[in-house]
Structure formats: structure tokens, C-alpha cells
Length: 164
Image 1 (cartoon, rainbow, N blue to C red):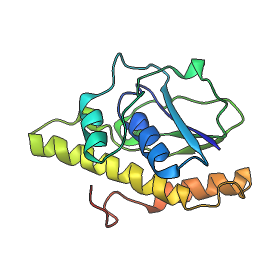
Image 2: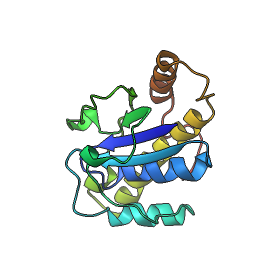
Image 3: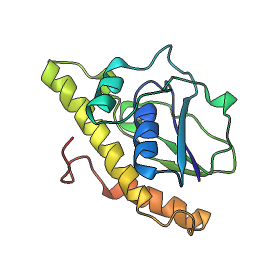
Image 4: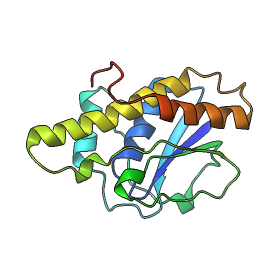
């Protein structure tokens, strides 16, 4: 299964999701990430967080979604509706789900506030990805997979018992 994590800038959240998914999934499934308006570079704190978690950052780059090397089976947008971000609209035939999470690269305040923002966003994505990978992905119909992905988003919060 090919999974695309999509957001506007592809510099933080979608890249983190790509790296975590590939780290946790083994070889059965693979993730990519892209943005509708990709940033010039990857957010440096994203790379630090991944390395801190023992997740490879090799090959991660902010990239456009209109030049994908694969056809995704699943597209998960990670833009934050609460912040008024406009999520890209993927028009292909993939199963689509939305896992909106705040963009920690926009966090302001003390170093501790910024650290908390990264921890919360990354924990939320990791929890959802783990739950997704616990599904029988190759056995679910597209409708059942969509419903399961939406349920994951609605039921898992970043404070559900896992520390970063």
C-alpha cells in the first residue's frame, strides 16, 4: 500500500508522518509526503525530533505533490483546520482521510512552549500511524479503510498515554 501524507508546505508534519510511517511499517507498506506549496527546506526542528526518536531523516525533502513517483492508495492530509489552514484537495482515486494537527513550526513562546508544540503534534501523528498500522490494511475495502482512518483521527488525541 502506498500512503501519501499531504499538507501545504511539506516541511514539518507531513514529513514527520512519512518518516514515522516508514520506520514503523517495515516493507509491507510505504509512505511519501508532499505539499501543494512546498517550502524551500525541511524544518530543522523536525529533523532534530526525528533523529531524537531514532528515525532516519535520510532523503527527506520538501517536495511538490504534482510530481509524485507513485500513485497513492491512501492520502492523509495533516493541515490544521482550527488554525484556518487550507488543506490541499487530492483529486485522485485514493482513499482520503484528514488527520489535522497543529503546525509546531508556527509555535511561539518560550523554548519549553515550542518543545511542547512539537511533542504534542508528533505524538498525535505517531499514535495515529501506529493505530493505522494495526489495521488489516490489505483486507479492508476502501470505504472501511476510510471509516477506520477517520475514527483514528476522532478518537486518538496526543495525550492518550504515550510520551514523546
